[in-house]
Amino acid sequence: MKKIANIFIISVLFAFSTIAQQSKYVVIISLDGFRPDFYRQAQWPTPNLHEMAALGASSDGVRGVFPTVTYPSHTTIITGVMPIKHGIFHNTPFEPTGQTGRWNWENNLIKSETIWDAAHKKGLKTASIHWPVTVGAKSIDYNIPETNIEKNAKDPLIQMRQFANPKGLFEEIEQNATGKLTARNMDSDYLTMDENIARMAAHVIETYKPNLTTVHIFNLDHFEHKEGRNGPNVVRAIAGADRAVGKIMEAVEKAGIKDSTTFLIVGDHGFVDIHDQIAPNVWLAKAGLMEKKKDRGNWKATFHPQGGMAFLYLKDKNDEQTLKQVQQILQNLPESTKKMFRVVEPKELAAIGADPEAKLALTAMQGFSFSDAFEEPFLKPAKGGTHGYFPNFKEIETGFIAFGAGIKPQTVIPTMGLEDITPLVAQLLALQMSNLDGILYPGILQNVPKK
Image (cartoon, rainbow, N blue to C red):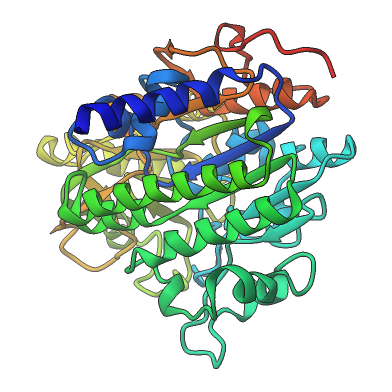
Protein backbone atom coordinates (compact mmCIF):
# COMPACT_ATOMS: atom_id res chain seq x y z
CA MET A 1 0.00 0.00 0.00
CA LYS A 2 2.86 2.37 0.88
CA LYS A 3 4.49 1.70 -2.51
CA ILE A 4 1.21 2.47 -4.31
CA ALA A 5 0.87 5.71 -2.34
CA ASN A 6 4.41 6.73 -3.27
CA ILE A 7 3.74 6.02 -6.94
CA PHE A 8 0.62 8.17 -6.73
CA ILE A 9 2.55 11.07 -5.17
CA ILE A 10 5.25 10.82 -7.85
CA SER A 11 2.69 10.77 -10.64
CA VAL A 12 0.90 13.83 -9.25
CA LEU A 13 4.15 15.75 -8.90
CA PHE A 14 5.33 14.68 -12.34
CA ALA A 15 2.06 15.96 -13.80
CA PHE A 16 2.60 19.19 -11.86
CA SER A 17 6.02 19.60 -13.48
CA THR A 18 5.05 18.76 -17.06
CA ILE A 19 1.57 20.16 -17.64
CA ALA A 20 2.82 23.57 -18.74
CA GLN A 21 6.01 25.06 -20.11
CA GLN A 22 5.40 28.74 -19.42
CA SER A 23 5.93 30.38 -16.04
CA LYS A 24 3.65 33.26 -15.12
CA TYR A 25 4.12 32.90 -11.37
CA VAL A 26 7.27 32.28 -9.35
CA VAL A 27 7.20 31.26 -5.67
CA ILE A 28 10.56 31.39 -3.88
CA ILE A 29 10.59 29.60 -0.53
CA SER A 30 13.73 30.06 1.55
CA LEU A 31 14.40 27.46 4.23
CA ASP A 32 16.90 29.09 6.58
CA GLY A 33 19.76 26.66 7.18
CA PHE A 34 18.71 24.49 4.19
CA ARG A 35 21.17 21.71 3.30
CA PRO A 36 21.38 19.46 0.22
CA ASP A 37 21.25 16.32 2.35
CA PHE A 38 17.66 17.17 3.29
CA TYR A 39 16.60 16.14 -0.24
CA ARG A 40 19.55 13.96 -1.27
CA GLN A 41 19.48 11.56 1.72
CA ALA A 42 16.50 9.28 2.28
CA GLN A 43 16.45 9.40 6.09
CA TRP A 44 15.07 12.95 6.26
CA PRO A 45 11.24 13.25 6.57
CA THR A 46 10.81 15.51 3.55
CA PRO A 47 8.49 13.89 0.97
CA ASN A 48 7.74 17.15 -0.85
CA LEU A 49 11.41 18.15 -1.13
CA HIS A 50 12.53 14.66 -2.18
CA GLU A 51 9.97 14.42 -4.97
CA MET A 52 10.48 17.99 -6.19
CA ALA A 53 14.24 17.37 -6.39
CA ALA A 54 13.76 14.02 -8.13
CA LEU A 55 11.36 15.38 -10.74
CA GLY A 56 12.63 18.94 -11.13
CA ALA A 57 16.10 20.52 -11.15
CA SER A 58 18.30 20.52 -8.07
CA SER A 59 21.84 21.28 -6.97
CA ASP A 60 24.30 19.10 -5.08
CA GLY A 61 25.49 22.25 -3.32
CA VAL A 62 25.17 26.04 -3.53
CA ARG A 63 28.13 28.24 -2.61
CA GLY A 64 27.18 31.17 -0.42
CA VAL A 65 28.52 34.67 0.18
CA PHE A 66 30.91 35.80 2.92
CA PRO A 67 29.84 35.87 5.64
CA THR A 68 27.50 32.92 5.22
CA VAL A 69 24.77 34.47 7.36
CA THR A 70 21.09 35.13 6.72
CA TYR A 71 20.71 38.77 5.68
CA PRO A 72 23.60 39.13 3.19
CA SER A 73 22.67 35.74 1.71
CA HIS A 74 18.97 36.50 1.29
CA THR A 75 19.83 39.83 -0.30
CA THR A 76 22.09 38.11 -2.84
CA ILE A 77 19.27 35.66 -3.63
CA ILE A 78 16.94 38.51 -4.66
CA THR A 79 19.51 40.81 -6.33
CA GLY A 80 21.87 38.43 -8.13
CA VAL A 81 24.91 40.36 -6.87
CA MET A 82 27.46 39.98 -4.09
CA PRO A 83 27.39 42.04 -0.85
CA ILE A 84 29.89 44.60 -2.20
CA LYS A 85 27.17 45.68 -4.65
CA HIS A 86 23.99 45.26 -2.60
CA GLY A 87 25.43 46.68 0.61
CA ILE A 88 24.11 44.20 3.20
CA PHE A 89 27.32 42.91 4.77
CA HIS A 90 26.06 41.39 8.03
CA ASN A 91 22.88 40.49 9.87
CA THR A 92 23.65 43.21 12.39
CA PRO A 93 25.59 46.18 11.00
CA PHE A 94 28.89 47.08 12.58
CA GLU A 95 28.26 50.02 14.96
CA PRO A 96 31.42 51.92 15.99
CA THR A 97 30.07 52.95 19.40
CA GLY A 98 28.92 49.45 20.32
CA GLN A 99 26.37 46.96 19.07
CA THR A 100 22.80 47.96 19.98
CA GLY A 101 21.08 44.81 18.74
CA ARG A 102 19.83 46.50 15.59
CA TRP A 103 19.53 44.34 12.47
CA ASN A 104 19.52 45.34 8.79
CA TRP A 105 15.72 45.32 8.57
CA GLU A 106 15.07 48.28 6.25
CA ASN A 107 14.72 47.70 2.51
CA ASN A 108 16.24 51.09 1.63
CA LEU A 109 19.61 49.73 2.82
CA ILE A 110 19.80 47.60 -0.34
CA LYS A 111 21.85 49.46 -2.94
CA SER A 112 21.07 47.35 -6.02
CA GLU A 113 17.94 46.40 -7.93
CA THR A 114 15.87 43.53 -6.56
CA ILE A 115 13.63 41.05 -8.35
CA TRP A 116 10.69 42.79 -6.64
CA ASP A 117 11.80 46.09 -8.20
CA ALA A 118 12.12 44.55 -11.67
CA ALA A 119 8.78 42.76 -11.42
CA HIS A 120 7.06 45.91 -10.15
CA LYS A 121 8.45 47.94 -13.06
CA LYS A 122 6.96 45.39 -15.44
CA GLY A 123 3.55 45.78 -13.83
CA LEU A 124 3.58 42.40 -12.11
CA LYS A 125 2.14 41.86 -8.64
CA THR A 126 4.65 41.02 -5.89
CA ALA A 127 4.38 39.59 -2.39
CA SER A 128 6.75 38.72 0.42
CA ILE A 129 6.26 37.01 3.77
CA HIS A 130 8.89 37.28 6.52
CA TRP A 131 11.78 37.91 4.09
CA PRO A 132 14.82 39.73 5.51
CA VAL A 133 15.52 43.39 4.64
CA THR A 134 11.98 44.16 3.48
CA VAL A 135 10.71 46.78 5.94
CA GLY A 136 9.33 49.67 3.88
CA ALA A 137 9.85 47.94 0.50
CA LYS A 138 7.91 50.05 -2.01
CA SER A 139 8.00 47.46 -4.81
CA ILE A 140 6.33 44.70 -2.73
CA ASP A 141 2.56 44.94 -3.11
CA TYR A 142 1.70 42.50 -0.30
CA ASN A 143 4.36 42.51 2.39
CA ILE A 144 4.66 41.08 5.90
CA PRO A 145 8.34 41.89 6.60
CA GLU A 146 10.71 40.20 8.99
CA THR A 147 11.35 42.70 11.75
CA ASN A 148 11.84 43.01 15.48
CA ILE A 149 9.47 41.21 17.87
CA GLU A 150 9.21 43.31 21.04
CA LYS A 151 8.56 40.54 23.55
CA ASN A 152 8.04 42.89 26.52
CA ALA A 153 5.66 45.25 24.71
CA LYS A 154 1.88 45.18 25.12
CA ASP A 155 1.67 44.04 21.50
CA PRO A 156 4.98 42.28 20.71
CA LEU A 157 4.08 42.09 17.00
CA ILE A 158 3.41 45.82 16.70
CA GLN A 159 6.21 46.34 14.16
CA MET A 160 4.94 43.56 11.89
CA ARG A 161 1.49 45.15 12.01
CA GLN A 162 2.79 48.68 11.38
CA PHE A 163 5.11 47.74 8.52
CA ALA A 164 2.69 45.37 6.76
CA ASN A 165 1.70 46.57 3.29
CA PRO A 166 -1.03 47.41 2.51
CA LYS A 167 -2.21 48.63 5.91
CA GLY A 168 -4.47 46.07 7.50
CA LEU A 169 -2.96 43.08 5.67
CA PHE A 170 -1.67 41.59 8.92
CA GLU A 171 -5.10 41.81 10.53
CA GLU A 172 -6.73 40.41 7.37
CA ILE A 173 -4.44 37.38 7.59
CA GLU A 174 -5.23 36.90 11.27
CA GLN A 175 -8.95 36.98 10.54
CA ASN A 176 -8.85 34.66 7.54
CA ALA A 177 -5.79 32.41 7.89
CA THR A 178 -3.99 32.20 11.23
CA GLY A 179 -6.21 33.43 14.02
CA LYS A 180 -4.92 36.02 16.48
CA LEU A 181 -1.12 36.00 16.44
CA THR A 182 1.02 36.50 19.52
CA ALA A 183 4.74 36.56 20.27
CA ARG A 184 4.53 32.92 21.33
CA ASN A 185 3.11 31.63 18.05
CA MET A 186 5.66 33.69 16.12
CA ASP A 187 8.49 32.44 18.36
CA SER A 188 11.18 30.28 16.73
CA ASP A 189 11.22 28.02 19.82
CA TYR A 190 7.94 26.61 18.54
CA LEU A 191 7.26 24.97 15.17
CA THR A 192 3.96 26.82 14.92
CA MET A 193 6.00 29.80 13.69
CA ASP A 194 6.69 28.09 10.35
CA GLU A 195 3.07 26.90 10.17
CA ASN A 196 1.86 30.47 10.59
CA ILE A 197 4.29 31.85 8.00
CA ALA A 198 3.04 29.20 5.54
CA ARG A 199 -0.58 30.12 6.32
CA MET A 200 0.23 33.80 5.69
CA ALA A 201 1.80 32.99 2.33
CA ALA A 202 -1.05 30.66 1.39
CA HIS A 203 -3.66 33.34 2.11
CA VAL A 204 -1.85 35.96 0.02
CA ILE A 205 -1.38 33.53 -2.90
CA GLU A 206 -4.98 32.30 -2.88
CA THR A 207 -6.45 35.78 -2.48
CA TYR A 208 -4.21 37.99 -4.65
CA LYS A 209 -2.32 35.61 -7.00
CA PRO A 210 0.96 37.59 -7.03
CA ASN A 211 3.29 36.88 -9.95
CA LEU A 212 6.29 36.82 -7.62
CA THR A 213 6.14 35.61 -4.03
CA THR A 214 9.07 35.26 -1.62
CA VAL A 215 8.71 33.39 1.69
CA HIS A 216 11.23 32.91 4.51
CA ILE A 217 10.81 29.78 6.69
CA PHE A 218 12.92 30.07 9.84
CA ASN A 219 12.59 27.28 12.46
CA LEU A 220 15.19 24.98 10.90
CA ASP A 221 18.01 27.49 11.46
CA HIS A 222 16.94 28.03 15.06
CA PHE A 223 17.15 24.37 16.01
CA GLU A 224 20.38 23.76 14.08
CA HIS A 225 21.90 26.53 16.23
CA LYS A 226 20.62 24.91 19.42
CA GLU A 227 21.31 21.26 18.61
CA GLY A 228 23.76 21.06 15.73
CA ARG A 229 23.23 19.52 12.31
CA ASN A 230 21.39 16.37 13.38
CA GLY A 231 19.55 17.20 16.61
CA PRO A 232 16.10 15.68 17.29
CA ASN A 233 14.33 19.01 16.84
CA VAL A 234 16.23 19.57 13.58
CA VAL A 235 14.44 16.47 12.27
CA ARG A 236 11.11 17.92 13.43
CA ALA A 237 11.95 21.35 12.00
CA ILE A 238 12.83 20.09 8.51
CA ALA A 239 9.65 17.97 8.56
CA GLY A 240 7.74 21.15 9.48
CA ALA A 241 9.48 23.10 6.72
CA ASP A 242 8.53 20.38 4.24
CA ARG A 243 4.94 20.61 5.44
CA ALA A 244 5.07 24.41 4.98
CA VAL A 245 6.25 23.91 1.40
CA GLY A 246 3.33 21.52 0.83
CA LYS A 247 0.89 24.05 2.29
CA ILE A 248 2.10 26.73 -0.11
CA MET A 249 1.99 24.33 -3.07
CA GLU A 250 -1.59 23.50 -2.14
CA ALA A 251 -2.45 27.21 -2.05
CA VAL A 252 -1.13 27.59 -5.60
CA GLU A 253 -3.38 24.75 -6.69
CA LYS A 254 -6.39 26.28 -4.92
CA ALA A 255 -5.64 29.61 -6.62
CA GLY A 256 -5.94 27.89 -10.00
CA ILE A 257 -2.42 28.81 -11.12
CA LYS A 258 -0.61 25.48 -10.63
CA ASP A 259 0.07 24.87 -14.32
CA SER A 260 1.96 28.14 -14.78
CA THR A 261 3.80 28.36 -11.43
CA THR A 262 7.48 27.69 -10.80
CA PHE A 263 8.70 26.85 -7.30
CA LEU A 264 12.24 27.64 -6.19
CA ILE A 265 13.23 26.13 -2.85
CA VAL A 266 16.38 27.92 -1.74
CA GLY A 267 18.58 28.33 1.32
CA ASP A 268 21.09 30.80 2.68
CA HIS A 269 23.81 28.66 4.26
CA GLY A 270 24.63 25.23 5.62
CA PHE A 271 25.64 24.42 9.19
CA VAL A 272 28.68 23.32 11.19
CA ASP A 273 28.68 21.57 14.58
CA ILE A 274 30.76 23.43 17.17
CA HIS A 275 32.52 22.50 20.42
CA ASP A 276 34.47 25.67 21.33
CA GLN A 277 34.16 29.44 20.92
CA ILE A 278 37.00 31.93 20.33
CA ALA A 279 36.89 35.54 21.57
CA PRO A 280 39.47 37.45 19.45
CA ASN A 281 38.67 40.78 21.12
CA VAL A 282 40.36 39.41 24.24
CA TRP A 283 43.66 39.72 22.34
CA LEU A 284 42.91 43.29 21.25
CA ALA A 285 41.82 44.39 24.74
CA LYS A 286 44.99 42.87 26.21
CA ALA A 287 47.04 44.90 23.70
CA GLY A 288 45.21 48.14 24.61
CA LEU A 289 43.51 48.46 21.20
CA MET A 290 40.06 48.51 22.79
CA GLU A 291 38.62 48.74 26.28
CA LYS A 292 36.63 46.07 28.08
CA LYS A 293 33.39 47.97 27.62
CA LYS A 294 30.25 47.34 25.54
CA ASP A 295 30.89 50.57 23.62
CA ARG A 296 34.56 49.51 23.23
CA GLY A 297 35.66 52.67 25.07
CA ASN A 298 38.65 54.43 23.55
CA TRP A 299 39.24 51.88 20.82
CA LYS A 300 41.48 51.65 17.77
CA ALA A 301 40.61 48.18 16.48
CA THR A 302 37.87 45.63 17.12
CA PHE A 303 36.52 42.40 15.73
CA HIS A 304 32.84 42.14 14.73
CA PRO A 305 32.06 38.41 15.06
CA GLN A 306 29.04 36.52 13.71
CA GLY A 307 29.23 32.76 14.06
CA GLY A 308 32.10 31.26 12.10
CA MET A 309 33.65 34.60 11.13
CA ALA A 310 34.99 37.79 12.68
CA PHE A 311 35.65 40.97 10.64
CA LEU A 312 38.28 43.47 11.77
CA TYR A 313 37.34 47.17 11.80
CA LEU A 314 39.55 50.16 12.60
CA LYS A 315 38.26 53.37 14.18
CA ASP A 316 40.43 55.22 11.69
CA LYS A 317 40.29 53.18 8.50
CA ASN A 318 43.63 54.67 7.40
CA ASP A 319 45.42 53.65 10.61
CA GLU A 320 48.05 51.39 9.05
CA GLN A 321 50.08 51.24 12.26
CA THR A 322 47.20 49.69 14.20
CA LEU A 323 46.49 47.26 11.37
CA LYS A 324 50.10 46.10 11.41
CA GLN A 325 49.87 45.72 15.19
CA VAL A 326 46.80 43.49 14.88
CA GLN A 327 48.49 41.42 12.18
CA GLN A 328 51.49 41.01 14.46
CA ILE A 329 49.27 39.93 17.35
CA LEU A 330 47.72 37.25 15.17
CA GLN A 331 51.08 36.15 13.86
CA ASN A 332 52.54 35.82 17.36
CA LEU A 333 49.77 33.61 18.71
CA PRO A 334 50.83 30.06 19.62
CA GLU A 335 50.58 27.56 16.79
CA SER A 336 48.02 25.65 18.86
CA THR A 337 45.77 28.75 18.72
CA LYS A 338 46.41 29.67 15.09
CA LYS A 339 45.23 26.26 13.90
CA MET A 340 41.70 27.15 15.12
CA PHE A 341 41.13 29.77 12.40
CA ARG A 342 42.41 31.21 9.14
CA VAL A 343 43.09 34.86 8.32
CA VAL A 344 41.20 36.10 5.24
CA GLU A 345 43.27 38.88 3.70
CA PRO A 346 41.87 41.96 1.84
CA LYS A 347 42.44 40.53 -1.65
CA GLU A 348 40.38 37.46 -0.80
CA LEU A 349 37.67 39.61 0.78
CA ALA A 350 37.52 41.74 -2.35
CA ALA A 351 37.37 38.70 -4.63
CA ILE A 352 34.25 37.36 -2.89
CA GLY A 353 32.61 40.79 -2.62
CA ALA A 354 32.73 41.23 1.16
CA ASP A 355 32.67 44.48 3.16
CA PRO A 356 35.47 46.79 1.87
CA GLU A 357 35.58 48.58 5.26
CA ALA A 358 36.86 45.41 6.92
CA LYS A 359 40.66 45.31 6.99
CA LEU A 360 40.80 41.53 7.30
CA ALA A 361 38.64 38.71 8.61
CA LEU A 362 39.01 35.51 10.55
CA THR A 363 37.17 32.37 9.48
CA ALA A 364 37.05 29.57 12.02
CA MET A 365 37.98 25.98 11.39
CA GLN A 366 35.13 23.50 11.67
CA GLY A 367 34.22 22.93 15.32
CA PHE A 368 34.98 26.52 16.35
CA SER A 369 33.01 29.76 16.29
CA PHE A 370 33.64 33.35 17.41
CA SER A 371 32.11 35.49 20.16
CA ASP A 372 32.32 39.21 20.92
CA ALA A 373 33.45 38.66 24.53
CA PHE A 374 36.48 40.61 25.73
CA GLU A 375 37.15 38.95 29.10
CA GLU A 376 39.55 36.03 29.54
CA PRO A 377 39.69 33.20 28.74
CA PHE A 378 39.70 33.65 24.99
CA LEU A 379 38.52 30.04 24.46
CA LYS A 380 35.36 28.66 26.03
CA PRO A 381 33.30 25.51 25.46
CA ALA A 382 30.29 25.77 23.16
CA LYS A 383 27.65 23.47 21.73
CA GLY A 384 25.13 23.32 18.92
CA GLY A 385 25.87 24.61 15.45
CA THR A 386 26.60 27.78 13.54
CA HIS A 387 27.44 29.29 10.16
CA GLY A 388 29.15 32.42 8.86
CA TYR A 389 32.32 30.65 7.68
CA PHE A 390 34.13 31.37 4.44
CA PRO A 391 32.16 29.41 1.80
CA ASN A 392 34.79 26.97 0.61
CA PHE A 393 33.77 23.63 2.11
CA LYS A 394 30.85 21.24 1.71
CA GLU A 395 29.10 21.53 5.06
CA ILE A 396 28.52 25.28 4.68
CA GLU A 397 26.87 24.91 1.25
CA THR A 398 23.12 25.38 1.00
CA GLY A 399 20.50 23.74 -1.21
CA PHE A 400 18.46 24.55 -4.30
CA ILE A 401 15.44 22.96 -6.01
CA ALA A 402 13.51 24.28 -9.03
CA PHE A 403 10.21 22.63 -9.87
CA GLY A 404 7.17 23.31 -12.03
CA ALA A 405 6.50 25.47 -15.06
CA GLY A 406 9.49 26.09 -17.32
CA ILE A 407 11.82 23.68 -15.49
CA LYS A 408 13.35 20.68 -17.24
CA PRO A 409 12.64 17.53 -15.19
CA GLN A 410 15.33 15.38 -13.58
CA THR A 411 18.18 17.86 -13.96
CA VAL A 412 21.15 18.02 -11.59
CA ILE A 413 23.40 21.06 -11.15
CA PRO A 414 26.57 19.91 -9.35
CA THR A 415 27.56 23.37 -8.11
CA MET A 416 26.16 26.90 -8.34
CA GLY A 417 26.19 30.18 -6.41
CA LEU A 418 23.48 32.07 -4.55
CA GLU A 419 23.85 34.87 -7.10
CA ASP A 420 22.69 32.47 -9.85
CA ILE A 421 19.09 32.40 -8.57
CA THR A 422 18.11 35.91 -9.72
CA PRO A 423 19.01 35.28 -13.41
CA LEU A 424 16.69 32.25 -13.37
CA VAL A 425 13.82 34.30 -11.89
CA ALA A 426 14.46 37.04 -14.44
CA GLN A 427 14.27 34.50 -17.28
CA LEU A 428 11.10 32.85 -15.98
CA LEU A 429 9.23 36.14 -15.58
CA ALA A 430 10.95 37.97 -18.48
CA LEU A 431 12.34 40.66 -16.17
CA GLN A 432 14.84 43.21 -17.42
CA MET A 433 17.86 43.16 -15.08
CA SER A 434 21.49 44.02 -15.81
CA ASN A 435 24.93 44.04 -14.15
CA LEU A 436 24.26 40.78 -12.36
CA ASP A 437 27.05 38.70 -10.84
CA GLY A 438 25.08 35.50 -11.36
CA ILE A 439 24.57 33.56 -14.57
CA LEU A 440 21.62 31.70 -16.07
CA TYR A 441 21.96 27.93 -16.51
CA PRO A 442 19.79 27.32 -19.60
CA GLY A 443 20.16 23.58 -19.22
CA ILE A 444 17.59 23.50 -16.42
CA LEU A 445 14.93 25.26 -18.50
CA GLN A 446 12.25 23.98 -20.83
CA ASN A 447 11.69 26.10 -23.93
CA VAL A 448 9.88 29.04 -22.36
CA PRO A 449 7.77 31.02 -24.86
CA LYS A 450 8.53 34.71 -25.05
CA LYS A 451 5.97 36.80 -23.24
